Image 1 (cartoon, rainbow, N blue to C red):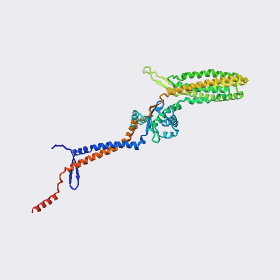
Image 2: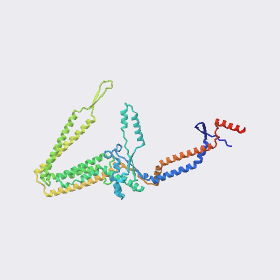
Image 3: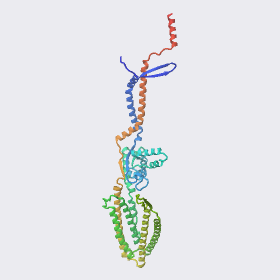
Image 4: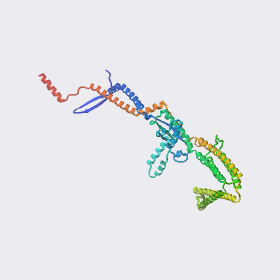
Amino acid sequence: MDEKKDINVTLQMEQEGKSEIVISVFSIWRGLKRFFILWIAAAILLGIFSILFSALFASDQNKRTSALVSFTYKGIEQGKDPAGKDFNVKDSLCNPEVIQNALTQLGRPTDELESVRAGLSVNGIIPSDAMDRIITYQNVYQNATNGALSAAQAMLDVSYYSTQYQVIFDYSDTSYSSDEAVQVLNQMLDCYRSYFFEVYGYNKALGSAIAAIDYSTYDYAEAVDVFSTTLTTLADYLDQLAEEDTTRFRSNKTGYTFADLSSAVETIESMDLDLISSYITVNNVTKDRQALMTYYQYRVDSLRRKRNISQERLDTITESIDKYEKDSILIFGNGTDNVNTTYTQASEQYDKLISQKISAQKEVSTATQQIDFFETRIEALEDRSAASREKMERVEKDLADLNEKVNKLLDDVNATSDEYYENVAFGNAYNVLVPASSSAMGFIRSLINGAMKPAVILEAVALLVYLCAAFIYGLRLEKGKLPEAETKPEEKSTEKQTEKKAKS
């Protein structure tokens, strides 16, 4: 007979008397072995059932596709758009214009726009190191004493704005297949690139504003002023671009840099425009002499008011500078000669006053020059007769040639700045890091993820049933081996009396 060392489990039950049931672990182990195959089969069937249930009844929850995009430009780390305003990524990415362009390019009906937009969501992705830093700041703030509270608050004021975003398209409320949903989302993200450059490229609005001016509706001298304003605006725009450009960008389309275009503007102003202006002034070329004199006089009066305002501002700034007390710095002697030296140093506010004074002086000087120019024109119109028709036709031809040059220059500026923004300034401003995709493995993965929670619950129940069944089986085995329960003393005396009577 084999000898086994059993570890026993004792169940003590309290009733009128005391009895004990001893269950060996070996008996429970026999129960576990007996029902092991059944438990494995049940676990496999329950897992398959969970996946089938997820595929058949919870398929709408798996109708999702996503992509990953990023923004890289100055200001995005503070949550700003390229224009310096607050950047709402969801409203920008999911703009109806972008979705409509995507649907149109795919040949789909535009009435799907609202259902597509309703299924879109955007989640910012925060890197783990940034999240750890934010949590650390919060812990410091919560544990800070009163003395360190202000420093902790300053740490907590540091905000983090995402530069990467997950764009999720839930197409459960649409009739799209997975491939169609992926196609719509990727096309939308591609169309957003053009929308982003169009909104933040800056140059198209400038070009539209300049092209909208029709010089032919003005008198000749007024048309010269219109062209002068146009070229000044264009020169300021080119100077701004040249200041931003640190790469000395040269366009592949036009072959120009911003410095080249700025030189072209100066050439047109100094050669073409000044030549036409001088010819008009010397020969009194005008469509309406009296109306032109009235216009000149109005400009003179307006410029005088502007000069007076600038002069008053200049006087105020000059007075402030004269009364301004510079910061004093005392340098102590080296201990031998006991000589201390005091220096005065201009502060940042003082530098601002100097800059404002220079700007006001420039405004006064410019207004004075323009006043002299218009007064000279008025004197010429008063002293000389109007020009002949032949001279008027020459001016009209020169203005038409000038307009053609300005429009050609404007096209070159637009093309150069477009290429600069797309390839340099905004070359990496917006990127699709991970496009949306549709695959069998992805679908299976989503099914498994959806079935995971109910599968875990069912498997836990199956395991519990398995353990209970093994324990009950072991209990029944041990119960069959139990000796008969001991008889109570009263029952023993009764049995003895019965035996004696039987013998007698």
